[in-house]
Image (cartoon, rainbow, N blue to C red; front, side, top):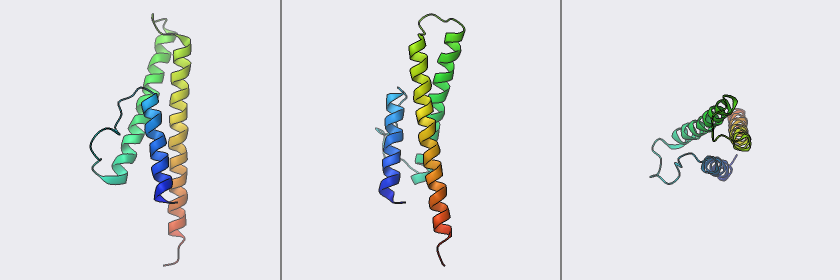
Length: 105
């Protein structure tokens, strides 16, 4: 797996966070901590998107004014896409790890 592929997936995750209306981390200073910190921030973004979707879903179920069904459905789909993207990143990282570990010493 190349660095360009990982960067591409990270850019997709940032775009998902931006479309979900969550605070963008890409506009801040370069991240400290390297890849692990970037991965942690991406996972936090996924968690925030799921929390927002669940909060709106519960508010709709309780009949809160100003919460429309279409907004709830869109937020749930955004959270699902963010989760699926994170899952694919994990799968690719595991595959890359297995490939590296199978290299002869």
